[in-house]
Length: 440
Image (cartoon, rainbow, N blue to C red; front, side, top):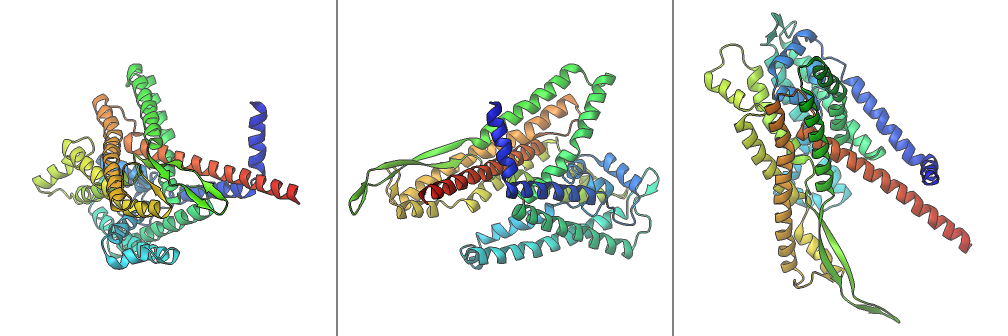
């Protein structure tokens, strides 16, 4: 066992490219964390922190996803949410608009054009959100102190420019991490934002337990809940439905190939963490704008709406669940084309036993994928909402709940899988080199 570990460490040391990619990811995450402490000029930091602490609900959740940048009103306060929203909108339009559908089929050239559209959309969304936040903050005060020192056009301009530039920099940084690092850069930035607040949350929870504010039984139940949800997420993310595929007998020259059996693996959760993230972003900004727009003369119905759109409230949970299920089906339909899969099977001489090639195969795969997506959507809703229900019932101030836990586990699994893929690729290349040397 020790020898195997030594071999693995030694092989990792020889993987110069993998080591450079990992160091690049670490360096990029350090830059991200340093940038989250660069404030936008004109904001009172104490009043801003008090405002976020008093508001709670969605603002706390958004502050968590941004790694505390919103509470400090740093240039990274918007995070990567504008980029995610723009990319999903472009993908949705790409499945409806014929010209964008044609771009999706043009390979790398078409993908570059779609990426350009996504960047333009990110600029527009970032500027719009920054303008709304600046306008809302100028009306706010906390603890008898105004949040903005000198309200006016200068503050609006600096906020729009600073927050938009911060979002664009994070978009560029995420793309660089994807290209030159390991894993998906945008997902890693969200992961870093969530994990950055984890030590403080754990310390606060343990201090409450030591002070008697939190019973030992509740603390043990929280730890058990986190471990249980983590194991459940790992199990569901690795779960697959394997459709048996038979390859017909082929002959060529003096060789003949017997019937071969393989499998078409279909993941239960094909959409990943996109549905919860997009559902959060949709629910976050209307409630955020409404709550920040409260200047003391807010109408009764708007106050009730803001209260109802707070995590843990029945209306929020229902709308959130509907959005997650809707986006799970929609995003799966975007990333997985059953007709294209059926055509690929037909071209390779493969068929599903008992199913005619072509349209019948596509309908069968689509029916299987629909049932899997239904199970995957319910799994996402349970993982994201059940821990929230239990935390609200126990009144435990531990923010590492369902959505954040799902994102962290999925990102870690993806990162680990890509590192293993690089290691396997290196071993395969080494075997090829040895084989060539022996032949020579």
